[in-house]
Image (cartoon, rainbow, N blue to C red; front, top):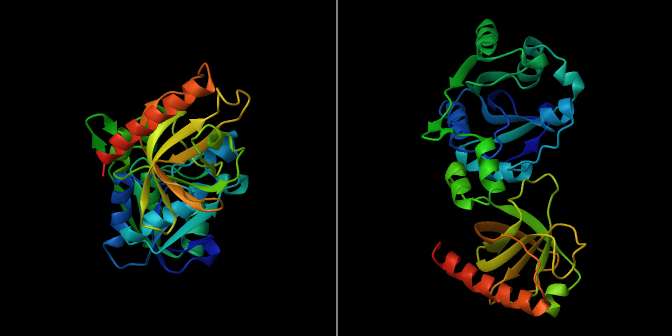
Amino acid sequence: MIPLCAPENAKLPTALALGSFDGLHLGHKKVIKAITKESIGIPTVVSFWPHPREVLFGESRLRLDLPNEKTLLLKPLGIEQLVLVPFNKTLASKSAENFVNEILVKTLHAKHIAVGENFKFGRNREGDITTLKQIGESLGIKVSIIPILEDPDGRLSSSRIRKSLTEGDLKQAKYLLNRPYTFRGTVERGKGLGKKIGWPTANLKIDGRKFLPSLGVYAAWASITNKKERFYAVMNLGPQPTIDPNSSSAVEVHLIDKEINLLGQELIIEPVQRIRLQRKFESIETLSKQINLDAKFAKEILTNNI
C-alpha cells in the first residue's frame, strides 16, 4: 500500500495530480497519467479532506472511495503517495496564488502540476486553469491541463457514478468506474434473527463516510480481506421490515451454500445486480421462501458473471 500522509510528511519534490478523484474513473486516470509518464518528481495525488463542501456549506459528502481504498487503486497507476490536505476555513480563505505558493510550492515542492480543465481553487473558487498556468509559468513549474473525458451520454463524472448507484444500476456504475464497485465492512455480532429463520447473515459495520447503493436485495460477491477466494452471496441493504419493523438500515450478507464463522473478519463486498426492492412480507415463512428464491436467483446471476 502506498503511504497516505499529510503535506508536511510527503516525499519531495513532487509531480502532483490535484483534485478529489472520487471514484477514480478514466477521466481521473488521464490526469494522473500526465504526471507519471515523466520523471520530474515523486508521482503524487493531492486531495482535500474533508470535502470542501462539507466545511463551506455543511453538506454531508459520502465518498465513493475512502482514503485507504484509494491508496490501493493508485499504486498500480504509478502513484507513490496520496497526500490529504486538511481542508478548513483558514485554507478556504487563501487566495489562489497563496494556495499554490504555500501548499503546492513551499510545502510540496511541486515541479509538475496536473489538473482537469474544470479545476477551480482558492478563495471563492477564484482560481481556474488560466490562473494556474500563469502562476506555474512565473514559478517555473510545469502545468498540464487535461481535457474532460466524455462518452455519448456526457462527461465522465463522480456524479454519474453516484446516480447509477442510487438507482441500483451496478452495471452502469461498473462501466463508469471501469472496475467493479466494492465496499468493505467488519462482521459484528447481530441479533441472530436471520439464523433463526434458516438464513444466517453476516452483519457488516460500514464506515459511515462510504457511499452505498440504494436500498434493496442484491446478488453480490463476498471475500475476506487479503484472501483470494470469493463466495456467492445475497445481500440485504436496508432495514428489516418483516422481522423488525423498527430496525435501522443495515448491511446483511448471506453466503450461499457456505457456513463460515466470519465474526470479526473484514469482508469486501461487490454487489453485482439488484434483485428486488425491499418489502414487508405477511409472515416469516413467506419471507424465508422469498430469501430462498433470492439466493437461487443471485447464484444464477453470479455464475453468469464469473
